[in-house]
Length: 75
Image 1 (cartoon, rainbow, N blue to C red):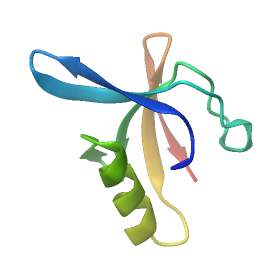
Image 2 (image 1 turned 45 degrees about the horizontal axis):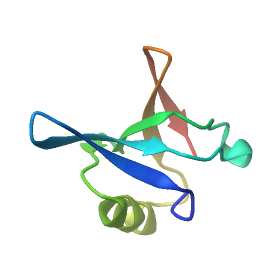
Image 3 (image 1 turned 90 degrees about the horizontal axis):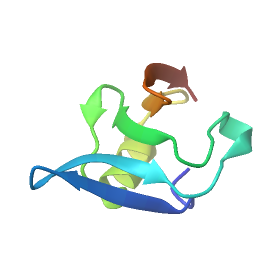
């Protein structure tokens, strides 16, 4: 997930989310999915995504938004 192409999306001068520019089929993620949080913590950078995934236990949750639907995936 950390190696995926990701774009930081800014709204109202704040990081709103991270957008996947490429799919990660092994995790069920599609191009254009919005990465909102890891383990309930709002994402503000790709570095933070990597750090939170590194600190996670065997499994962690990633909250995404796809087509106006928000879902939490366990990875």
